[in-house]
Amino acid sequence: MIPESSKEKVGALMKSVLKVGSAVGLVSGAAAIILYQVLCFWLEVSFEKMTPVSILVMCVVVNVIGAYIYSKLAAETKRPRLYYGMITVLAGVLLSLYDWAYPAEPDIAGVANTIHALVATLSIAWIPIWMRKSISSGK
Image (cartoon, rainbow, N blue to C red):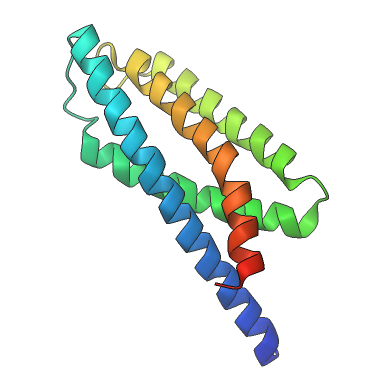
């Protein structure tokens, strides 16, 4: 049986993961939507499968996953930010390569890859800082 104090710590950590991941996801999603709109305007393209709603949802999902990964790295390693950055860059590169190799729609890779880069950069910059602040404040 897990002691109550351990359950409370796990609950607080998961609350921080959801709060930070969602917040970073919403902010990076808003930035990604602006970038999407600008790129679509400049490049004179539009997409059926990539919409502002899908961009926002995916930004929240990947950043909640990212906050969870960071929390595990922070518990297991001495340099969680470095490892989190490497994992995030690798994931972004793999997603970009997939978009180039198997585009969901014509010309989508250029726009999607730019958005991957933005969201990955914001995730690397903010998740470690916001997770530390969230955990240390006990909220």
